[in-house]
Length: 280
Image 1 (tube, helix red, strand yellow):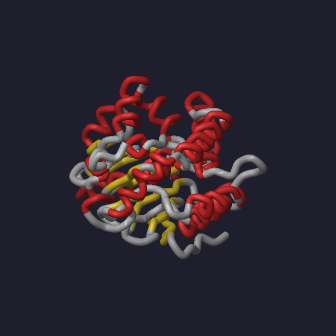
Image 2 (cartoon, one colour):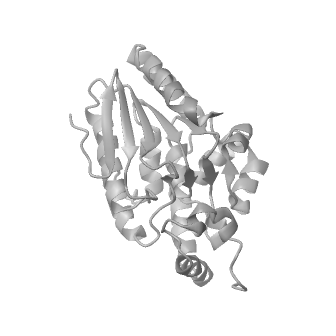
Image 3 (cartoon, one colour):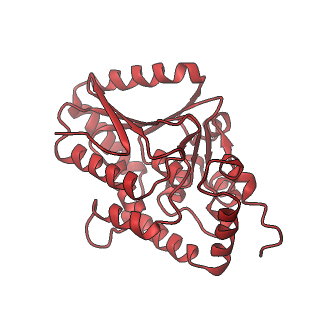
């Protein structure tokens, strides 16, 4: 068993694997990161050793994961497809597989988790976030698309119908306190307390007999997670919407202003998707 990757740094302690995303300043979900996540998840299914809990965090204090790499959708989709069978060539179906992995998964979020980055966090069993700086959002509707990797499915189940429509159709940013109040995340914690809280909880769970923990997760998953057909439908709709001329025009406009580079657009993407200077 090995956990060695180019875009994920790992350390293992007391049954907990700490997986730190390190795919550049924005942690875009692109080819390298998807390839490494697919490998990590495959190992957790096939030979997890004594790993009982995985904590996913970021090497960047500003970005847990900004979103998918919008310049490499076919390429990262091809990598995601390696995790599933025929017909499962989508990031959504890979994250569906992550949600069912036979260990407990925790997203520890500092900075921005938007689009596919938020969907990565939602695929984990629990999300804990830094009150001072964590930001969550599904900005896709602001460009003419919709979440395609589980965002619709998870947010509707967590937030309820009205709040899910607010979050998805409104395409705005949610700070950690509001995300906690809506049920988007488990807890918002002071940044100085976040590491200690997550580590204590992870090691507590890792110390319990694993069969009971796995059975509890399977039972909760059966009651709460979407069916594969729903995930596949969202993925197909996302791809179709991203190809529309109006969506392409909006994404190109955002790119011309600095999308996918550290700067004002990525820092305040919830506002940026409302500023299209007359584009319709």
